[in-house]
Image (cartoon, rainbow, N blue to C red; front, side, top):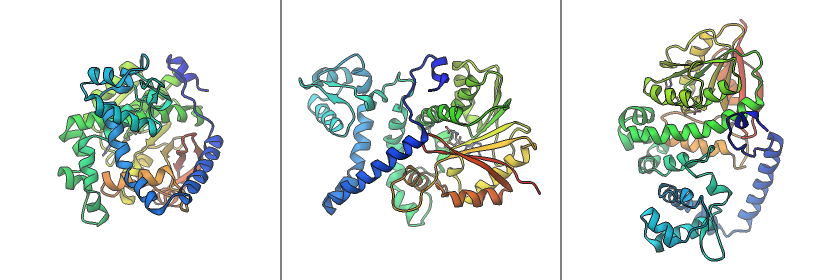
Amino acid sequence: MSEIPRALGLPVPVVPPPAVTRAVTAARRALGRTHDRMTAPFQVVLERMFGVIDNKALFVAVDLGIPDLVAGGPQSAADLARSAGAEEDALNRLLRYLVSRGVFRQERDGRYANNAASEFLRADHPWSWRSWVLFFGSPWNWDIWKSMDVRIRGAGDAVVAAHGCDFFTFVNEVDPSAGVDFNKAMASGSRMQALLFAEHYDLAGVRTVCDVGGGSGSVLAHILTTFPATRGVLLELPSLADDAARVFDATGVADRAEFAPGDFFESVPGGCDLYLLFSVIHDWGDDDCVAILRTIASAMTPGSRLAVVEPHVERGAAGNFAKASDMLMLALTAAGRERSLAEFDALWRRADLTERRRVVLPSLFDVFELIVARP
Ligand SMILES: C[S@@+](CC[C@H](N)C(=O)[O-])C[C@H]1O[C@@H](n2cnc3c(N)ncnc32)[C@H](O)[C@@H]1O
């Protein structure tokens, strides 16, 4: 598919077009409903409860570097335990469990190897999801989830209950190692989304891009790499400056990318052709979203457009990535939420923006293309 990874010398991840993803998702849902109907009620509950085991098992295996240790070929639990500094029997049981959950493969002789899923967890895999596992299973993130009930009961913010401050203050100012976990996870997720975005969203005529709340700049770097005549600016909190400089240097776009330290509630650079809000507004309640959107709208010229990239919550009982991500917003933010199409529409109207089109990416994230509404 894309020329971008090829140009960067990276293997091309296999991503089907949106229609295929939709069909496969529908089939998986139907199979999942059949599975649940064939499962005793107590087993349904047990399986949901055991989600916590998957999270920690993955975290420990990745933290021990197992996907990297087996990258050169299958290894016995004894050899892996020696290299990773683990107890052989415990590690063997951990990996046996993960194999049963579709991560890693076990040879007939009992040695462990990577399968397609664990390949994605190697540190040197260009599309690695290792950082997501390390963020998600980290003790500091678990501390937040321990306080999830605080949020549900309406007794406050789970992150404040766990760490004494809001999420972004915690990761950007209080605990630098948590910040590294989080920002790397965001960057690895957005690298993949950026690839899909650049492939499926028409960027013709765009010469200047402002990525608002663009994290460490990996989305912007992908866009600039794909479109060599384009210049970009990354509007972010000042603490992300060094990370962004590293990303811009590593991807060879430093001469066309600028870091603008700032606050998207106050102002963003004016007059860019395209503004991006990638996985940002789900962090905020409606009033804050409208404030962010208005800040951007006031910086836009008549030819500018704003692309908001978020998944949407589907109607009905079907499982949907946005519904799971909405739980993250409940746990990690004071008022963030994933939204339905109608809820997004209400935000655009309040911010005096008009939705010109909606493009669905193969990840099933939507790109909402907005322009300033005419008076
Ligand atoms: C969920 S992350 C998304 C990052 C990036 N867009 C991506 O998709 O990888 C939200 C980003 O918003 C940034 N942010 C939070 N509050 C901000 C503010 N007031 N002004 C500018 N950026 C902010 C955070 O630092 C974080 O990088």
